[in-house]
Amino acid sequence: MKTTRTSTLTILAACALLQSAAFSHGGTKDVKLHVSDRWKECSFQLDPSLTQEAWRQFTQEGGLVAYFRPLVSAKPMGAGNYEISVTQWQTAIDDTDPAWNDTFVHPDSTHWLYEGSGLAFPGLTMRAGITDRIDVGVYFTKNFRANYGFWGAQVQYNVLHDLDTKLDASVRGSFVALFGPEDLGMNVVGLDFLASKEFSVWSDWVTIAPYAGVSTYLVNAHETTDAVNLKSEHVTGSQAMVGVVAQVSLARISVEYNLAKVNTLSFKVGVGF
Image 1 (cartoon, one colour):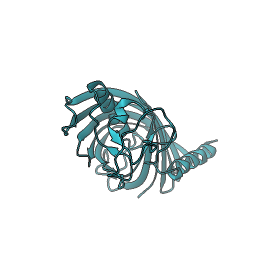
Image 2 (cartoon, rainbow, N blue to C red; image 1 turned 135 degrees about the vertical axis):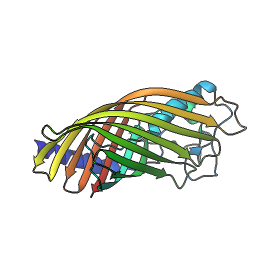
Image 3 (cartoon, one colour; image 1 turned 90 degrees about the vertical axis):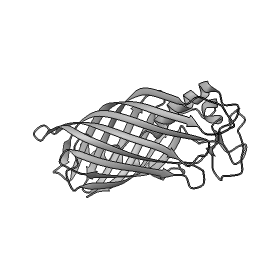
Image 4 (cartoon, rainbow, N blue to C red; image 1 turned 120 degrees about the vertical axis):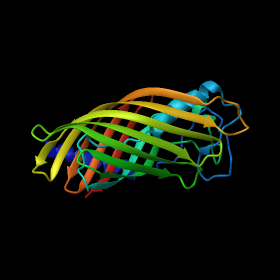
């Protein structure tokens, strides 16, 4: 049964990373898109019709889209160990809402913000064990055909590491910032508490570690354009997470689901040393 679950996770993660490009678009929806040929892909540009209410909704949902999810258990990596991974998370926003339609422009009138069931972001992450209890990580993503990207960093501190029961608990602080757009700035500060338990499937070569946790976050957004006159927004919120990390020798495969105002499904495939 445990081997089957590991195989299933592998298939899910591979399918997620090999699906259509994460910044792709599609759909037939009864909303007029704002069009600009300045960029090849959908890009941030605030429309004069953007209201304060929609701006606040964008701040809250955009913060959840960008939130740094390292997709790891509470177990510390250990000093001198590191991991490099490819990630992708998909958030179920509604791109027909003014919060998203009035904050983006598109190459043409049929070029939607995303296709499928949510807005997906690929990214690269790297983690390293600094001490026996402290891990650090960085995150980066950039759409080179558009005008935006995100970078982030996190620190995770282990507060419980029981070698007998293989139970772990950690707290994690994170920061993510938007870069590139001329019209706005946004950043997200997060604090997570998570717990996990590791199970050995085959010696120490194959393990599974289910985890769960809760997060609190603060999203800050401000506009920097004459097209609108909006107050800066500072939105707080919370979310819950459940996930599992599978380790097969040096390979790391993770799946996580976040419950919040807009829900996110995340995947990661990487290698650890």
